[in-house]
Amino acid sequence: MNGLRRTSVCAAAVSAAVFSIVTPATAGPAWAAPAPVRSQPEPAAANYPFERLIVGYKPGTAEASSDAAAADDAQMKGMSVHRRMASGAVVVDLGAKTTNADAVIQSFKDDPDVAYVEPDLLMQPFADPNDTEYSRQWDLFEATAGMNVPGAWPSTTGSGVTVAVIDTGYVAHSDLADRVVAGYDFVSDAARARDNNGRDANAADEGDWVARGECGTDASGKPVPAADQGSSWHGTHVAGTIAASTNNARGIAGIAHGAKVQPLRVLAKCGGATSDIADAITWASGGAVSGVPANQTPAKVVNMSLGGRSSCSTTYQIAITGALSRGTTVVVAAGNSNLDVANFTPANCGGVITVAASSREGNKAYYSNFGARIDVAAPGGETRRGTGTPGTVTTPENGILSTLNAGTTVPGAENYQPYQGTSMAAPHVAGLAALLVAKKPALTPVQVKELIKANARPLPGTCSGGCGAGLADATKTVNAVHTAPPSGTLENTTDVAIVDRGTVTSPITSAVPGNASAATKVGVDIVHSYRGDLVIDLVAPDGTAYRLKDASSSDSADNVVATYTVDASSEVAAGTWQLRVQDLYSGDTGYINAWNLTLR
Image (tube, rainbow, N blue to C red; front, side):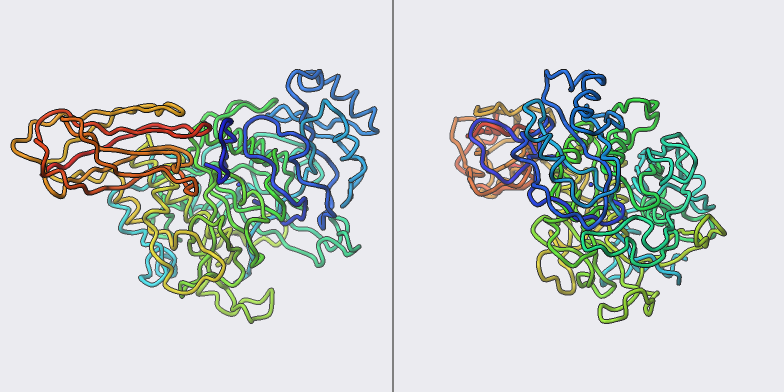
């Protein structure tokens, strides 16, 4: 799943949104265990002030299992422990807001018991909120740059799937009321939460308004934020795109309107802490978080329309890897800085579906991040042109219309407004993921990602810098699930684990008379990270092998989902045919999910 060649050990990469941050420079390894200190991002001046660190201790150390030992260690370094995370790491208080904690970070790095240390950065929502019903939802149905959603609905509406929206929480809206299941408020700081307590079971959006300079100053001494900001009700806008009630004679249509939305509040005044967001990812996907009751409705899809400028931290990657291992697809907004997404987290973490934003004309939206780490694009809209004055709304009809609230600080009357941003693009893909999982619950996060990418269509406009596989297409992607094999096709859908650096086979027995065709079709569905490790052959009943795929040290993509054509006309069709898969390298694993054979 990662793009680095390994020869003996697996460093499996697996995959996440809020306000903006600036942090360290290089990404830590994508694995579930704590990373070595040397792999952590080096300290850098952060433009957004933070007041805590996340410290991971090595397994077997006293601090890793004992709260008292961790507290003593922090005290020796002049700090105090705020709490322990679901991952086992501890959150350490610095005592004051800062944009530079190099000395303290170094004191932890010098400690041989410490596996990693990183700032507990505040994330920000990726959207341009603007104050500005189905006919206005061009993003769902327009032929040029819509996501072709209506054609998917006869097949699936997302019923039975829960989508977690890790965001600002939920403000009551009649077009979402029957789609929402119980969530949680993960904001651990009472002052930022505005609800007079820390974490609790009430995921209500209390408003994220903030006055100029209320969040401190940046590395240049400028006030954060630079101007007063009203409440965005960002999470409710995201939730509406995913699952707003449909055919109810009002408002908008949700992409997966049969699905449920689970609001998880992580963003509040001044943003959201990495430690809170990571715990929310764990809990949303069914993992345990200390002090938080078990999630009764774990999500199969997580949407994170938030992030900041940083490499992927170990904290995020551990949480994302855990979610993926529990079968939860993680969708993340790429960011709105018109820069390479490689520098923005959690969009640059392993295993996530990273989504860029496209415009109504089908171009990359002027603000959207881009790059090789983008998986797919989806409508994000443009409520103004790129040459327009920032903060103005000149083309509201080209934005993404969704559920919102009119309150400038605390909640007011419900309404609908257009927003623009990769925050708006990501929930389009999260909604599509819910449609897929509802149609075939056995789909893994890797398969969901590959289906969406493989069935995207080219952007009708332009994208410089990289927009992934193209524009997500809901109907085409949904139709690719459970596609009936051709008439006369034989199938084997029994999973076969692929042995690391070994060879496995999967049989199909045929009673077809005569010889096979000169255009024999072999359909292969293999789940495997770093597919370049694999050699695949079709083996005829007489032992003759027909090469379908060679190994490639440069093919770091995941999975093999393809149909091959071979000339097997010299072979007697009746007998046992085998799909033979050889894994030539150590470090990546997977399985044969299914394969089919059309001999005539």
